[in-house]
Image (tube, rainbow, N blue to C red; front, side, top):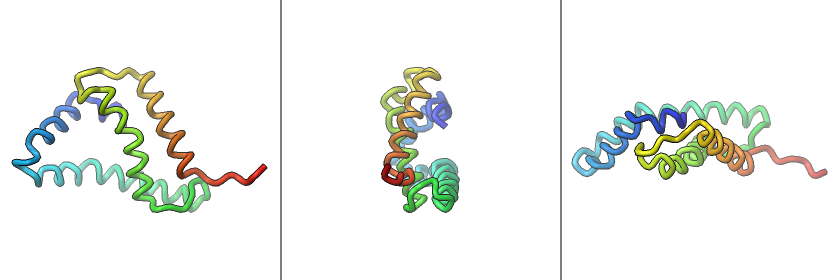
Length: 114
């Protein structure tokens, strides 16, 4: 997911959206419906299943998916500098691990006291 986010074409599309959003506000909805919404729905479905299995704390799966995506994507916006800087695999893995660690601290199952 992060590789796709940092891809030249993906960054170019986001730059174009940012530049033209005031002239074409409906375009953002179209792009979100075909990208971000589909990803969020897929993650929410998986998180709902993990919650039912007791692997995540009961919460709103769509909100958890949105939070997880933000933990991944947020740091990448600054690191790839809107596509002007290549981010290597090591850095992608570091960001991913940090996002997963933070997400599990917030949404992971409560561990019984020792």
